[in-house]
Image (cartoon, rainbow, N blue to C red; front, side, top):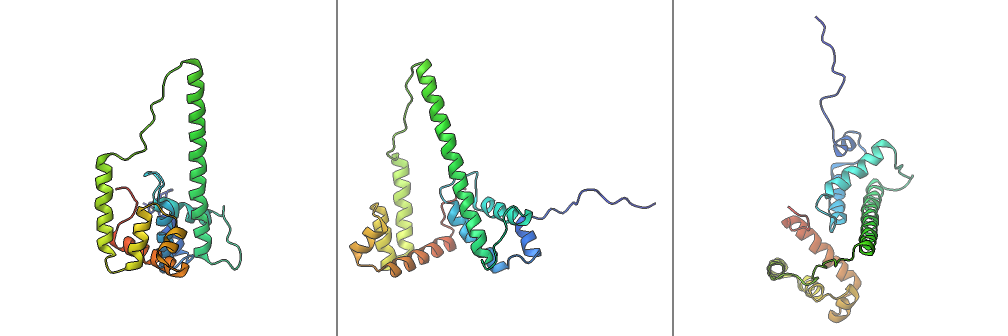
Length: 195
């Protein structure tokens, strides 16, 4: 008796695997894209991970909803898609926030009640946790003077220009130190991702 072929393919390829299989990206380019996606996923809610951004960008290219212009490198093109996905998420979040504020305002007009606002000051537990994490990061960069100056300036809530002028760091040295710091933190697994 002849076997009937299944109508549904049992092997499901993720967009990243499809892109590798179609030779749209090399393994090294995929690693670069993962780092870029991690960078852009910082600050997004926990339900939106860096892998979601990367997979969505690759899906849009594979489906054809985003077409790569001639002369633009693949990594640069996909990084732009990841950046626009992040911006799209923030636009949607701001829109939801405005709608929610409007609903609260409308509810206040009909039934007066107070809305409890959260205290912006961190709790003692969060302060302790932040100090401990900062101490670990300082140990990690103990031999890198420029990195320590940048970390200290960021801890004091200074802008990059203020940090550079306060410590006499050139723009190039500042940018190089930030890249070194980012690579070290990624290598050590110290990212802003929630577990």
